[in-house]
Length: 497
Image 1 (cartoon, rainbow, N blue to C red):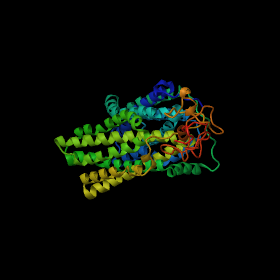
Image 2: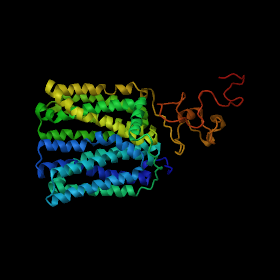
Image 3: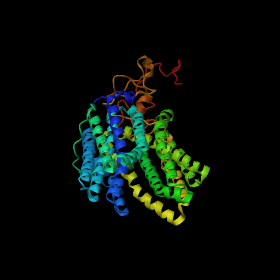
Image 4: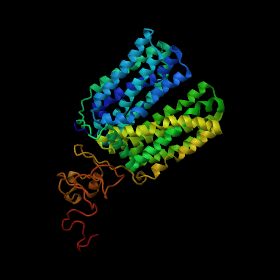
C-alpha cells in the first residue's frame, strides 16, 4: 500500500483529482434529480402514482442493495469500482437521451434507467466514503471530509437551479447529456489517481450473509457506533416527517406564496454549506468526539422555532430554525463520518458504512408516513412542534455513550501507516528522561507512557476507546514504568515524589 504523507489534503494531487471528480458528479446528479421527474411529467405524462414509483425507485436502492453492496465492495479494490459506476451511469443517461430523440422512450424504460442509476449510486456512495481513508492520512480525514461536504452542499445549492434552467433552455432529455458528461469527467479524474490500494481480501468461506452480519454486529457491539446509528436514524425519521409537511405548512398554514416558500427553503442548502465550512475549525478546537455530541445537542433545539413561523417578521423563526438545525447536522455528519473512517478496521469499512446507511436510510419511508398520519390527527403546526421536541431528544444516545467522556479520539492504525504526531510524541532533543524502553516488538525510538497508551486499546487508553489491537510496546499497567533508571523519578532521598 502506498504510504500516505501527512499534511494538508490539497497538497495531494490524488485528493485534488478526487474532489474534482466529485464536484462535477455532484452537480450532474443534482441536475438529474430534477430532470427525471420533469421528463416523466412533461414528456411521458405520468400519473401521480407513476411519478411516485419513479421517486421510490430513485430513493429505495439503499434499502435493497446497501448491505450486500458493502460486503461486495469490501472484497474489491474501490477505485476500479468507482470508475465503472461512473461509466455505467453515463451510458444509462445517454441511452435515455437517444431513445427520447428517436421517440421510443417509455415510462418503463425511464424507470429502468432510474433503477440502474440508483444501484450505481449505492455502489459509488459507499465505495467513495470508504476510499477516502485509503487516499489520505488519518490526520487529514477531517479536512478531506469537510472539503467533500462543501462540494456536496454547493451542488445542492446550484444543482436544482441549474437543472431547471437547462431544462428550460435545451429540454429535459438533453439536460441528461450534461450529467452524462459529468460522469465521464469524474471517471477520467478517478482514472488518473496514482495511489495504490491494498490487495482485496479473499471472500470468507462463511458466505455473504455471515459477512453482512459481521458488519452489523460491529456497529451494534461498539457503544459509540451504536449511539451514532440510533441518533442518526431518529433524526432522519423526524426530518423526513417534517419534510413531508413543510410545503403544506408554509403555503396553507402560514400563507406564503409558492415562490416565497422556495426562497425560504433555500436556507437549507445554505445551512449545509455553512456547516461544512465551520466543521473542521470546530473539531480542531474542541476535539472530534466532543464535536459529535455537542453539534447534535446544540442544533436540535433550533427545530422548535419552525412551528412558531408566522407572516411578516414571523418568517425569521423559520429561517433561523432551518439555518441552526441544518448547519449543526452537517457538522455532526462530518464529525461522525470522520470518526468511523478513522476507527473502523479497513477490512470492515464498506460493510460498516453500508450498515449505517441502511439503518439511517431505512427510516426515510417511515418518516413520510409518520408525518402524514400525525398531520391528519393533530394538525400540521402541532405535528411540527412534536417533531421539534423529538429532535431535541434525539442526541440522548450520544450523551449516554463514551463520547461524552472524551475530548478527542484515540485512533490506532495499522503498522504500515505513519504514526500520528501528538503532544506526547517525543522529539530527538527531548532527552532520555522523556522516553522509556519499550517491550518486545516496539519500534526503535522510545515513546512516552502516555503516547504508548494512546497507541493501543486497553486499560490505559485515553480518549474514546477505538476498536483495534494494542499497539507495539503497550503495557497492561500503563502507569507502571517498564524499566526505571536509578535517580529518575525520585527525590535525592530515594523516595518517589
